[in-house]
Length: 195
Image 1: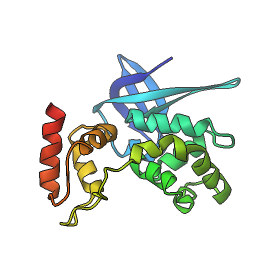
Image 2: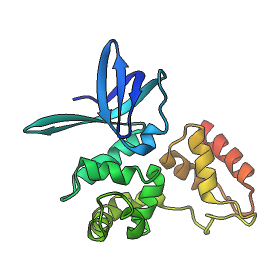
Image 3: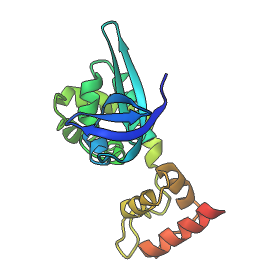
Image 4: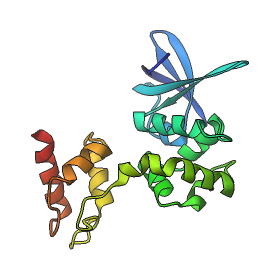
């Protein structure tokens, strides 16, 4: 029903915020990850999910489509409701959570409030194959260059420049990052993005 809402942030609480859009205030439940990226009186766009039950309509909003998509994947699982999904998303950034799932790090996921070991393991079993394509690395074990620069650091810089993880991965497959410094890798990636 709603794909996103853009408005000025009027209130920030522990688990929800209010966006003012043309004089209408929308209450959106969200994760700690999103809350730390929004600011009072700043115009913000949140990607939304309307959760419908017989006795309630609840609007959830997230700073990125990737976070929304992971939220929607989590709530499709039996035994994982919206509250638990928000708790998981509040552990950290979406890429970190996906990496934990792919690496079968149930201890990390179980750190979320209300998530036990069995639920964490179930989440891994259900979602691992669906998201592991997000973390297919380039060949030659170029996660680390000889200068010790990490693939994660490059990904973080590119993300800060507005590129999605999938865009960066595609571009990485087109370059040979062996023996390149982090700055050289980023430079080559930017050239590939412009092509």
